[in-house]
Length: 182
Image (cartoon, rainbow, N blue to C red; front, side, top):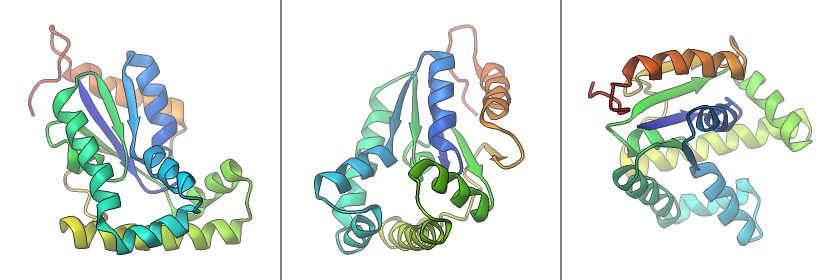
C-alpha cells in the first residue's frame, strides 16, 4: 500500500502521516524532514535554504527523485511532502488544507516563535516553493485535482482525520492487503 499525504506548512501532514503509519504499521518518509536536515547541515534557516533552492534546482530535484525511487521500490509506506502526490502517481493521494492563519498558529506553537515572524516566513516559503515547483516541474501547487481525498484540517483534529482516512484506506484494501487500482 502506498499513500501520500501532502499539504502546505502547518496543515498537519506530518502529524497525520505519523499517526497513520503507526496505525497501519507502515514506514513514513518525510520530504520536509529531508529538506530541514539539509538546511541544518548547511547552517541555514528554512527561508535561507528555500532561497538557495530557488537558485539551485538540484536541491528540489534530489528530494523529489528520492521520493520517486522510494515510491517505485517499496510497499507499505506513507510519503509525506508537498509534492508527494505528484511523485507517486499510483498512490492513494491525500491533501490536507487549512486557512493560513490556523496553519501559522500551529507553526508558532511548534517552533516557539512570534505569529508575525511565522506568518512572514510561511508566506515567503510558500511563494518560494510555488515558484520552484512551477519552474522545475510545471506544477501548480494550488491545483488539487490530482488528489483522491482533500480534508480541511481546521474542521477535524488529527485523530478524526486519521479515522476518516482509515475508513477510506480500509475500503480500498483487498483481501491480499493491497490497494486496488483506481
